[in-house]
Image (cartoon, rainbow, N blue to C red; front, side, top):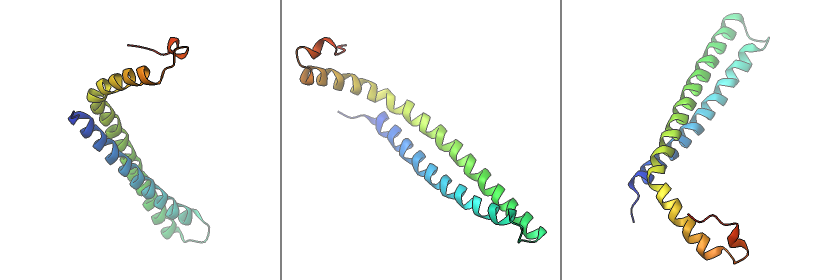
Amino acid sequence: MKFPNAAKGVKKIFNAEIISLIAALIGGAGLIPGLIGASQETGDSVGTTLLAVSGALLIVSGIALLVAGIMNIIGFIQAAKDSALFRRQRMRKESRERCSVPYSALCLHS
């Protein structure tokens, strides 16, 4: 049995996770110039430049995280087109195989 929508959705979710990791690294790299620029030891122009670089990196990181979140939601919606049927079939099979007689009253059969 093939699940093309689920495969496409999982690929989008995977790519969204990679983008999230890269955005976290960019955000972490954006904090370092901000901390250096905010210290008292740097000059005015150097501190201002470092704060601007820090702000730009944090904005890029935030936009990347927003894009990753949207991709994640789209991936879940796309994967649910196939996996809802798959999930129902798997739940029926598991409920028949794993539920004992006293426990079967608690199992949901659809």
